[in-house]
Length: 495
Image 1: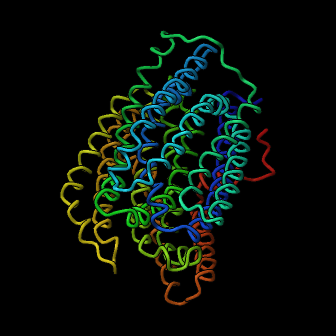
Image 2: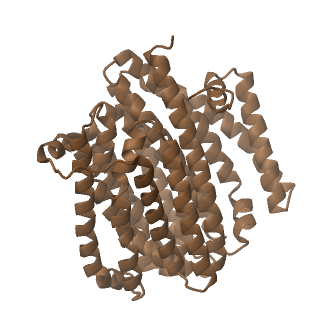
Image 3: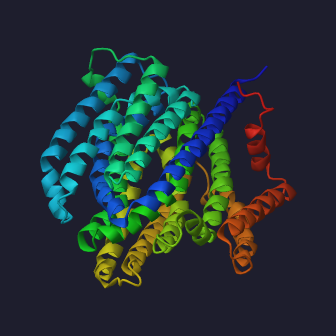
């Protein structure tokens, strides 16, 4: 008979499997749409929407306020808990929309482009739409029932893609991205309501809301700092360099996040419920932490290394030469993404141990370093040339990379102590997969001098990475690889 650990392991595996399926399918749909839009729309179109996204990111963060994570972290949330968080999300979303609607002309003046006023007033409707589905999605994740969530994501992205591509081909410019976002959120939200069949009760408990404050406030503070860190560069690029350079940055940021966010969210949504189950058992927690470290390293290093080397042929294959200035930005963001994924993983451990205050300190430290780098390099934005429109932006991203690396290292040391593990054990979990990846990047890079055709180069490098990485791990008898392949195998009964 399967014991509790076996059942939990099976649930985690099933959740992780469907998270991976969801992310691959979602990002596939998102990529197809993004490729078409990138070929049709201009750099300025992406810059306009990129400027609006800065403010929308802050609003979305405030709507959630960290309570969604607090709900997952709680072992047995009540119906009152869910209803309270739902009404809180809706109320804050409506207040923020009214505020942003009123201040839209001011936002447009910051970026010296009056087109932003109307674009933003429509785009910000997505804040209210998305707020209505937060608890619905949360309940499914809490149950480790990711399959309906994957279906909702796929339907939303498909509907949004149809709307966005049609409007882009009809010549609506930035409006294509605006309506793509709104339709995506609306269809996803409606699907979740129909699938989940959960209705909030007509009650709101201040006591329930207060009970989430310890974890939620820490997550909110962390999210705030993280959102500032992610968007401060877009703000200054748009304000000082203009919409076209912001468009180059937005494209690089968007495509790099497809891989980074997918990895980070997949392990977060699959691992947080598992960590909540073992948080009171120090031995099981340490064992679980070690396995999660190795699993994340097994996926992250080859994925990021593969994309860094293949950046140029991928961009040429998808976009031609139109977005070439974005390539170096894309590579730097991927390097930073490695640290981002692991820092996010370590933050999950701290959340599980109710150490959200430590997360805030780590994030504040990272942002402090980033601000110093920003102040030192900000004047460089104005020295970009028509031949190299992203010269100054490149220096800014090096600052982001340094800040992320320092934050990762300090967070690793703090997290290792809090979980009862050694710093060396954390590094030991990561090192084999990093070394294997770096070794494989050498023959992968050499093929760039042998093959000129982008599509053929992508195929060849993909085969090299897959064969060598799987082969080397098999020779080394990697337990993590064996378990990953078992979990993804259709012959494995995870029902």
